[in-house]
Amino acid sequence: MNFIFLGPPGAGKGTLAAAVSVTYGIPHISTGEIFRAAIKAQTPLGCKVKAIIDSGALVGDDITIELIKERLSQPDTKDGFILDGFPRTIAQAEALEKIAHIDSAVNFDIDDTAVVERLSGRRVCRKCSHNFHVVFMPPEKENICSLCGGELYVRDDDKPEAIKHRLEVYRSQTAPLIDFYRAKNLLKDIDAKPATEAVLETFKAAFPVQ
Ligand code: AMP
Image 1 (spheres, rainbow, N blue to C red):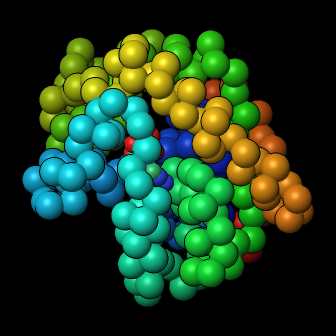
Image 2: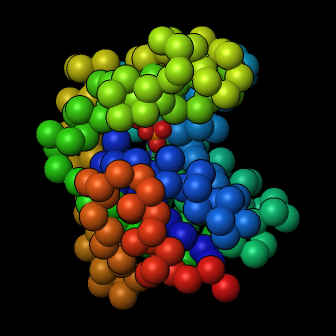
């Protein structure tokens, strides 16, 4: 199955995509993660997008579409994939139609208050990129990754001003994709407010593993 995961930042798309990727044996493709890896490695792409990402704005459509086109041409995507964070604009969704067939766009639905609570408490491992939450998923030792021992940090775009900006960007540029995919009968709404395990069960019931 070829999935798109939609929903505001903080809906838990990344965490769910990681779990779905294991259960269904298909790759989890996160454009945000690809950009962050490029920033960490200080590649030309990383240097170009760092300030944009830190502010909570969107990277240009052309760069992002090229990136996804290249990623979806790789052989590990032939039996399915999960796109997490792409498309984020109607232009990206239209470009995607020419690149790949999509079976379902899953909309992880959650209100703004819960989003702010989740994002402001998120901590990410510098080494392995695993996500924690100070309240909902705390590491065993404060600021240390329970998986690899790496240092945990707050993403620049999880700081209050950037969160506000990301939510505005989501409402104006990305939320219209919900109607875009609904009109194509590809949309599946899932309530993202419950704990990850419960949301994952809802997902598995909606899309039984083949
Ligand atoms: P995410 O990890 O999905 O929250 O993405 C982090 C940041 O990467 C976003 O706030 C954007 O600046 C950038 N980004 C990720 N995916 C896209 C996309 N499809 N289009 C434009 N910018 C993106």
